[in-house]
Structure formats: structure tokens, C-alpha cells
Picture 1 (cartoon, one colour):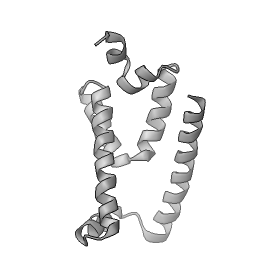
Picture 2: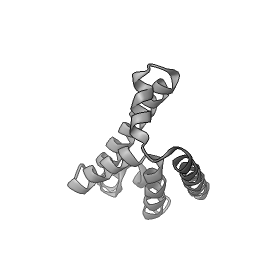
Picture 3: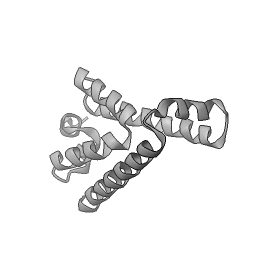
Picture 4: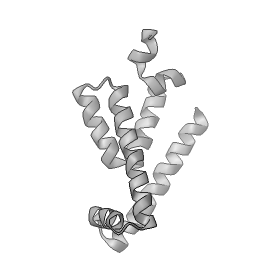
Length: 116
């Protein structure tokens, strides 16, 4: 679990730095570029569609892990729009709260401890 957490911290730091450089050099208006690439039917667009499906899966998993409560659904929406900038800190928090139990990390404490 320690290596997993080191990886998450490294990803968060690297991505934050990269995002700052891109934002400073190209502006902060990502959505027109993102959807423009999709509309072009280019490889960049294909990557963006693929990436968006990962974001959707991430959001659904976070909401599911929280039993689709209103706060869980809200976290799922943040996961979708926040990407790894949300997911890395979330997984750091969840892995700490799970006390090293991967079943709790993946399923959430209620499902992991329910025996279902």
C-alpha cells in the first residue's frame, strides 16, 4: 500500500505541475479544445473519447462506493470532471481510511463488512 500511495503522490505532483504549465501557456479553457478534437474525428479526439469513458467509470465507481448517496453522487461528478486531480487525493484518503485493507479500499467499508 505504501508504494501505491507514493505513486499517487508522484502522479498528483507531476500532473499538477504539467497542468500549471499548460494552463499558463495555452489558457484555462480546456473544453473547446477537448470537444473540438473529438469533433475533428482525429487520434486526439479518439484519445479524448477513450479518456472520457475512464472518467465516467471513475465517477460511477466513486458514487457506487458511497452507496449512491447524495454525497456519493456529488463525489462521482467531481471525479468525472476532476479526473486524476481528484482521484489521486481521494485514493490517498480512502487507502488511509481502509487501514491497508484492499477490500475496504475497493468496495467501501459498508460493502466490505456486510459479507455480501
